[in-house]
Image 1 (cartoon, rainbow, N blue to C red):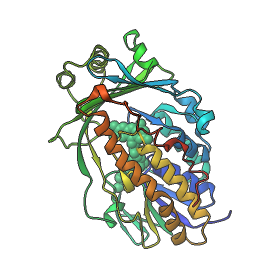
Image 2: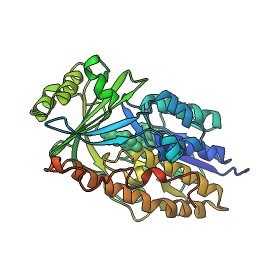
Image 3: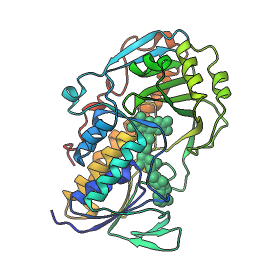
Length: 383
Ligand SMILES: Cc1cc2nc3c(=O)[nH]c(=O)nc-3n(C[C@H](O)[C@H](O)[C@H](O)COP(=O)(O)OP(=O)(O)OC[C@H]3O[C@@H](n4cnc5c(N)ncnc54)[C@H](O)[C@@H]3O)c2cc1C
């Protein structure tokens, strides 16, 4: 493959890094523009289901990311008040069942691997390069300079500047607020780390999973809280707020709140996007990842979709004789799945945070695994 069209990618998160690497491997010249002064990710975890890991395999980093993370063997869904296990999910054998592992990993560890992969693939990586507008296939930067290519890919997240070409609306507040903390696994938390999972209750839920060789536990507390709409990733919060919101929740939850009080606790509003009619404009500008379809995190699939988009985009462009055709094929291949996952993520919040916690899972579970999301293979899906 000796394609040398120049693709400019705006945003160096999971979507942008994966796309830039896949495009460079396919022979395109790729330039990635990141607004931040340096590449990095926040101090928190991310779950990468087998379908996401297949995408990382496509760019050659599946085993590196798996080695940097943890492959949990089981997960529990537990009752908010009693702590009783409502559903237990078997996560053994994921590699055999789905062709790739199920991994929980520190975001910064994974991102460092993605940056190395992009660099090795020959991607031109630029930091301090904040896009302020896109005209044609020219990206205008905050410092007054500009970068032009044959195509522009908007991978600039939920508040995407590139998306402004597609619709004037900003991201909307979903009514969900989240708190996160990364805490050491102490003897008190050992069982919660050994059995990662979710406590669910009316209007609230908590997820936990280990990262960094089971030494750290990633905690995310969710509550429906109209009125709070600040979504910065680094807004500190008072642990007393959590204690009040989760008053009456079981002993395990109180142990997690006590642990969160010993480490930085951050609070942010969860924003999302409504589906667009198209993620492609003028045959030369396209959106991927959160810029295209930011969703609520209740199926744990935003990053997975970002990786899938990136791989399918590169494959569709490589398989097409023109960029316009490639972008059209990318959108056709990805639209239904991403839109379905967006809708199911919202529905899953309602299922898990309903009033009748005791009845959860009775009559069958509707989650990311039972919905068949793990079976998807972005390496081979028709484009
Ligand atoms: C609480 C929570 C938990 C989650 N857990 C999971 C999970 O377990 N599994 C999962 O699959 N997903 C999860 N997600 C979703 C996942 O984090 C996102 O979907 C994913 O990070 C999106 O990647 P992205 O690259 O599209 O966007 P981002 O990660 O937002 O990256 C965008 C990048 O673009 C840069 N940028 C922004 N604007 C500009 C600009 N104007 N110019 C240049 N650069 C710019 C940013 O600095 C950033 O580096 C979770 C989300 C939340 C809120």
